[in-house]
Amino acid sequence: MDNVVSFNSPPQTSCANCRCTTPCMVRALPQELRGEVARHVTARAPIARGEHLFRQGEPMNAFYMLRAGSVKSYLDSEDGCEQVAAFHFPGDILAFDAMAERRHMSSAIALETIAFCTIPHDRVMALITSAPGLWSALMRGAAGHIVDAEQHALLLGQKSAPARLASFLLALSHRFAARGCSATEFNLSMSRQDIANYLAVAVETISRLFTDLQRKGALTVDRRFIRICSLQTLEDMANEGQVARVSHA
Amino acid sequence: MDNVVSFNSPPQTSCANCRCTTPCMVRALPQELRGEVARHVTARAPIARGEHLFRQGEPMNAFYMLRAGSVKSYLDSEDGCEQVAAFHFPGDILAFDAMAERRHMSSAIALETIAFCTIPHDRVMALITSAPGLWSALMRGAAGHIVDAEQHALLLGQKSAPARLASFLLALSHRFAARGCSATEFNLSMSRQDIANYLAVAVETISRLFTDLQRKGALTVDRRFIRICSLQTLEDMANEGQVARVSHA
DNA sequence: CGCCCTTTTGAGGCATTTCAAACATTGTGG
DNA sequence: CCACAATGTTTGAAATGCCTCAAAAGGGCG
Image (cartoon, rainbow over the protein chains, first blue to last red):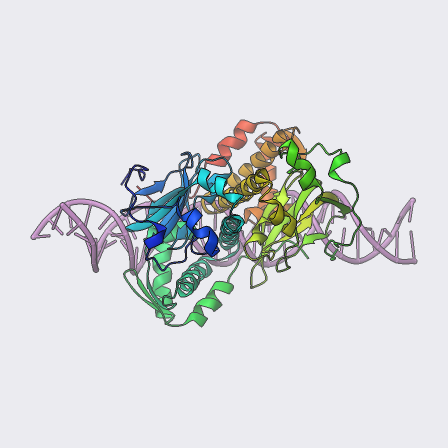
């Protein structure tokens, strides 16, 4: 589970005959630019669960566009502990945080077998002047990451453990719904351990909270399969029980 | 303390005769582009402590470049509680998070009287094709914000209260040092309340931790003035006492 | 089939919060 | 310029949410 994806692995397809239906940075571009940008996109060989797309500290080569499967990104602190920063699903672009120093500031690991494309960073740079739509797309992507990370901090800073889990499940629900999947029934691609770390609570707490939620009739849990029975209950929980600590008038 | 900065307030100076010595997005550009970009930069009238640069939800007009003073940015959640997201100092650029939806996703408020410039968002868009250096600068800025926000989440998720305060003080120290100011003596521009909220602990805890740090001889505190006596002690504290919860092998 | 890892459940402990009350500081109007 | 109000800070004592430890139950995979 340890090798980083090799940049020597053979390209699989090209954008021209890509049959993906997920949101895609390339297809989001105006028609006249697609060809030019697509020329530099490489569809890479799938990688298996547990393998890394990149690791913190490595030099940045490319942006990663996830086509299928899911990915977890996480930070290592100097003292060796980790913080899961985000979960990524098809259509997401990864490696924005590497733009600052041209070095990855987080690691990304596949939670299941994934398919993805890459576009070399220097090619993107070169294309910017001829494809302003590309710059907008990237900037919006980066901005989205900022918002997500700040919302994550808000969740960790202001919400109680039950509110965190409820918020997390609702966020997943919304993301799936936005992709045309069911908002109320889905499989978690991450372990309880990952959820616990992302929400910064103990694994045991996650387990207890799931049982509580089932007792309340808010959802049913079978292994990693979730069926939400009452979005309303989750929304109520997500907004109650914060730790106060307000700052301004 | 409630009006947002008016875009009708008169320009003060231009980049040509700007005497600022703080890091600046414009001066970071290659010589031949400065003039073109600078033409669109407006130095705005200073605003006082407690006034907002922008508020969450408002449409985005411009990027904000802080020239003097300090700013706090924070998020409001649906249920009305707040999370301080970051503190900003001269040279920082604000409003990246607004790029996603062209609407501010956080609020920014002056912690003391500040001087700043703005550059309209649509002008930046228009300049991108002719000034690739500008795009790099902005992208690096955005990436820096992602890294900061993710580090903030790591701090909240993995560190104990003492470690959080120590990390916070060290981060301030490094930022001041990078600006040519003392790394060991400085004034906090934010209240204990703001620090507490940023670190997601109770104000009382911050107060107690400051007294502890003084007892340990790590620093002296007088009101908002901090003198760090032992960076080493702070570094040790910043890395001990995390809550574990590791996720991967 | 059996080992191992993940998940669940219970009981006790501790870091941090909450509540309460001085105290200091800043701002304001007489 | 001082008194008073409002706000911010400090300190103490009690309460609690969540963690830690411990152990059993459940699935996945060779």
